[in-house]
Length: 504
Image (cartoon, rainbow, N blue to C red):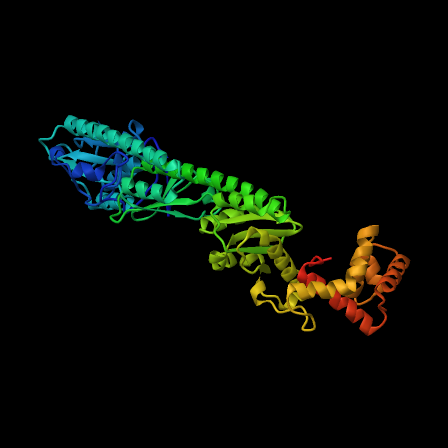
């Protein structure tokens, strides 16, 4: 694999195997020269180095032309400077190749000694073309032909570059990446695709075109994620590297614009979802605010535990890039996503790596969003109580009741919880105490005084005093199985119906 940085309008570095086909060439190539009848020049090493771009042509009759002529040049000689010895002929070819000279053409039947098979074999090995110009063809006409051809290629390059940027302008308004890629593909004459970022070493190579195979070229885009633009030509064409770089700049610009639009969409959506979860917006205007995000009912909510907001924006953008419209925010230690139930399978696939991920039941009205939030919190709370048996995706529609002894339906659950815990809840509301949370922690810790006091950050005697007050208000004794069971089932009923939070 060879890297071909753009330099002075041409590629540097060897890229064997590049030759035929048409795309806008970097400059006039050796292959074009030998296929131009008016220049009466043929190759003594057929097929060798025909990809090489000829920027200029100059006569040189010295035995070491590389001392005077360099990059991009075609050396023209009558043969006076060509040595007769085999070893010297090989050094002649190697010296020009190493200096960046693209080819040498020798006048037919002039002053050159016989060219040795060893010299031609070395030229083939180096992919260095050795040409022969007909006796009747003046070198000045060859030089003028190269200059004129390069001028025409420059005009083609300018026109093609203008059309690339015109394509960008036509698709910038709606940030239509697929449309732009289709236009770029038509202009370049090859198959254009975007690939994920490469290795760390490749990410440093912005502005370089890499030849990765016959007719296959890639370059890293200056865009979020540093993807790779790949252009593939069916006939192993040598493309114009400067035009490929302009194509990369055009695609990178639209990717950056799309990223900025997606980031703005995420920020607005995150604020909107946060307000919806806080019930800060009435359901009717909330539905109107949701319309620009193109999330159609029925809705579904997904959530997982996240200790920070790291990666939230990337998750939103990844879902959006996969065609999943979504609102995503962080709240109370959870990352919460609102999407369309019709895309539930794609949502689950995109979030499974964060597991366990809780999925609410589908709902049609924004007014039901708090209930969906309660459902996902409840599922995650259950998962924490049995971590070893938790699947990566938890669906509320598949969830079993927390206990077979609890009544069915939210209304009956609320009634059961209120009958037992109502006086305790009223006491907490009127006096600002925390007896219900204390009771819940005490039962969750299997009535352990030490663990409960540690978890509540209170002295053990304070806990004893609170439990005494709880028993007095509820009329239940916590040192008995029946009393503890009655209060535990009441707490579970309160959690299931939303009267109590899923976690304490």
